[in-house]
View 1 (cartoon, one colour):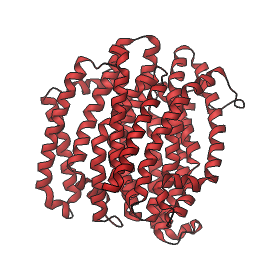
View 2 (cartoon, one colour):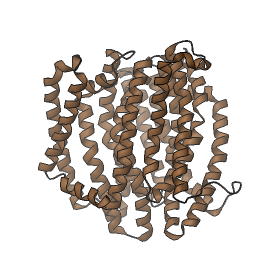
View 3 (tube, helix red, strand yellow):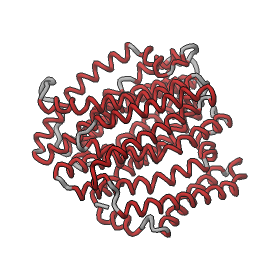
View 4 (spheres, helix red, strand yellow):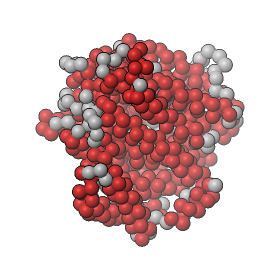
Length: 526
């Protein structure tokens, strides 16, 4: 694997792992203090609104269009590339400031569109109030995503990868401070301690966004990238090109977010389901974030440069190594989440306001999401093949098909199987998207074909993951009594440790993984 790609994967993946661990700590505290009650569900909906539009504007349409254009300009003139970035910053500030103001005014409509099942109870006014406080986060985090794109394109991954961890730090500090000294926070005007903590969490959202933007802006300035606009927004030829490329990606991003809306709408009609799906989402997001985000962030700029240079062999190598890396870390994670979901959920969340019934429901959602985890990550591997060539129309068509699949499954099966239909729709839609993306890149020839090494190792990884699943299943039965007492955290640590060791041992024996290669890549990185 190319040293530069490995360095990027390890840097982004390592910091994303830290962010996800802090995210677990955050969610453990939320489950402890809020459980699955009205305040918890209102917070989850309020927080998901700016995050939904963040993926739509920043990490979706805009970033997928901006990064290839910026990366290509870097090949010619870095000064010209930064001028393009300043124009993009100016345009984003104007557009998102207006959008934020509009969203705050229309928040009741947004909440109803997100969770109409809330309309008849106290969750609706709570979600509207929380949403208005949290919504400015979209402007801050979208700017942070743009600046992160500049840093990543210049092979500076550290600050951009570390920034998300800061949001979780702000959340954790806020909850602990509110729990320890509630008398100091009377200005939040909350009737109970749980509502006080929920209100503090909501105010932490824009504060966390400001901290994230501050970090990446400082890192960009230190690297010599002056991104503060020097004039009012103007429509340059480069920005016109950016909008032309971004428009289909924006529509595709909108379709993806409608997919999320469908699941949230179905869940909102079942008490507690929004919270169960959210906690399950946090667990499967750990491998998805560590692997999928690392690959998406690093692979797109690298492929864009190789496409510009006409390096066909390099494109195939980058794509094959990204697939290999994702398959190696994602498949065993999916098997583990499928085989031992109950111990994971119970040890992490079952305390305080989060009871045994919540554990069972969350574990069921986690198993359904685990079936789709490889698909979620493979999308991150396949999409850069399109975006590096400035093709955003094809992913749009495929996203529309996945939306239809999701809606048919989630809405059609909800009367029969209840809230799990929301998770099942998400999983099946993800696999439909992967099939369409893989089918669509066949015309690229060798560039989009896995090399011999990747094809050979893929089946070895599958076999190693299955064998690891058998080990986990047997060990979970043996450790069963420990999970009911004070030693449950130790039992989970043993389960996780044995699972990791057994998978990599099987992978080594089957030739699907070579520890010497990883050590060599890390040594070259250093």
